Image 1 (cartoon, rainbow, N blue to C red):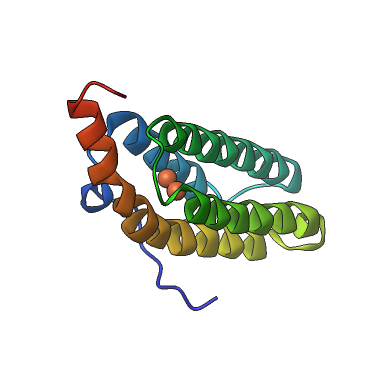
Image 2 (cartoon, rainbow, N blue to C red; image 1 turned 90 degrees about the vertical axis):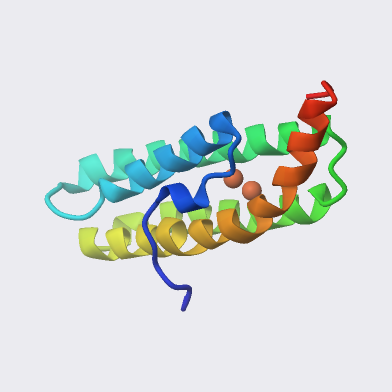
Length: 137
Ligand SMILES: [Fe+2]
Ligand SMILES: [Fe+2]
């Protein structure tokens, strides 16, 4: 994966508080992988991150469904790729070193997910805000 790596910053806030809190939480969880740790703690952290990610993706899709967002099908496909990558990592994690797991998490969150927020998530913000201002969301 040759996506550039970046950490969370206010620059990637959408202005939708619930979404921003979930995005930030995923970066916080990802940041806990580098450094000291044992296999059991890391496997638990990985499961927690995958769980939290799936909650976020589901909540975001429900929000977009509620406003009949026209890009929803394409957005779901992007989320499905992310779910798939997380499933692969969960499946392989026992065979990986803790450093390798930390690197894979960085590629997924600080790489792929960061870019997703900047591009695919950023694309729905105007539609969500406009439907909120009409009192539909
Ligand atoms: Fe998304
Ligand atoms: Fe998102």
